[in-house]
Image 1 (cartoon, rainbow, N blue to C red):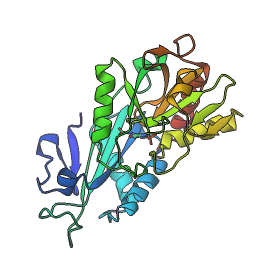
Image 2 (tube, helix red, strand yellow):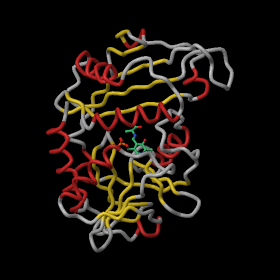
Image 3 (cartoon, rainbow, N blue to C red):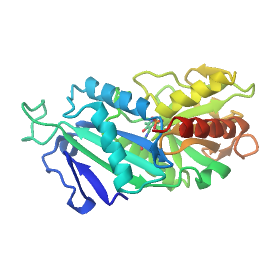
Length: 285
Ligand code: PDD
């Protein structure tokens, strides 16, 4: 974990990084966050993360006390001050601390906090062997395109995965279609080699890694179908994989205990991981 965190303009040791119990992030989950990967001490795909942060803030009418350029400087400072060469940087902005009242408080400055985490992203043990996924009902609200800190449904989903001996949960809407992973975008590859993922809408978070991975796939002439897919179609898929800032591209080798193809990571997932890594390193800042 971070030794040094950022809290409202100051870099402080983690144990001194504190916010009010009246903070609306704590009381109402009235806030948004972003997570960007760090490789070679640099931020990965960060322009997309900052653009999404700005959009999330706008959707919640949360006015940032600092510019997006300053936020990038905070991210870089957290990486440097914590000597993170590989891992993640986390930022969260809430509507601030105010007497508890559901509607927006007046004249309150938003809270901005951040920290960094070291993590083996390149040498992830799951890159070689793939991960297992379990499906769960999607219990979330109707604005999943906003990267809100209201993550209780995702917490329950990931816990179900952990208890099932899996590493990720795919959430499923009431019509039987997969929305996304608890903290990742969901993909399958059909028997004819088409990469299928749900189109962006209010039903899912528009993944930054998804966007770049799809652009790379398209540049290589791979077929992409942006459409929803059912759990039944996923069971029969040739391959599956996920994308996220914290795991980049990871192959999925089984869903609900059913192995996909021969139960080993598929060629599309392996190729896209390699392509994404090259892209990430070439464009890191
Ligand atoms: N989660 N869908 C959900 C619900 C997510 O929480 C995430 C990311 C993604 C992938 O988005 P991106 O490629 O931009 O990271 C999709 C982050 C990593 C987290 O909460 O830790």
